[in-house]
Length: 233
Image 1 (cartoon, rainbow, N blue to C red):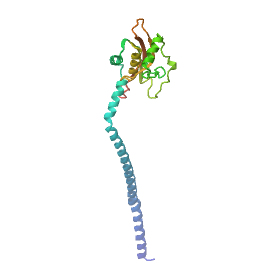
Image 2 (image 1 turned 135 degrees about the vertical axis):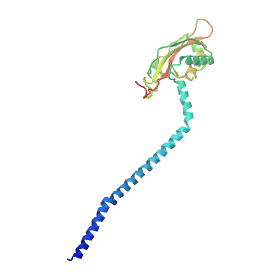
Image 3 (image 1 turned 120 degrees about the vertical axis):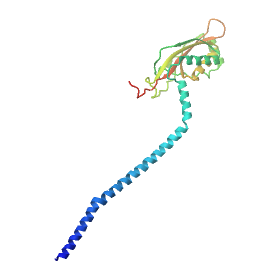
Image 4 (image 1 turned 180 degrees about the vertical axis):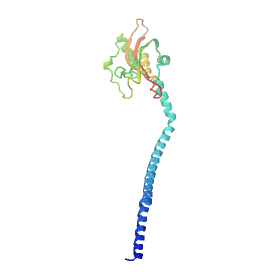
């Protein structure tokens, strides 16, 4: 083997080594970078698509923001963040005027933790005929209060607990015809403020005026102010 052939073989081997080193040190890393970049691009495209879907949902919710605010305001009127007893009394007076009864007494007891069993619900009385009620009142001078045990079981909601809901026991005594008393009870359960009536009793007065005295007991409710995480404990 002469020197020229050796030089040729050496040159070929050197060129091969350069090619291999070029691939290992230059081209292969670049191809890996391209693959990573393509993967990142695909992930970014997918994430952008998800953001677009979320953005569309937020836009739709924002379009209903006014209606949601009105609904929230109505709920806060029904179950305020504080007792607001003066407003409650004003509403009771308004219902009494509309029903044709006179409020002779209003009693508010200490607030207590909400208990769905204690704060039961009695059926609405608006469907009871007035003539039947008047007849019942005439034949029975005194009707005992409805027992809580005979009332329908209240519907419990796991989101409403003693930690965020407070019940205020209230008792209202009114005077009027039996039908007017029933109208007053019905108005209480359909008013702005959420009031659950759980006991009603009527007693005919000694005078022959045709009026009865109705005692209505129930609960008004207060929603606890949700805790602020930024507020120091």
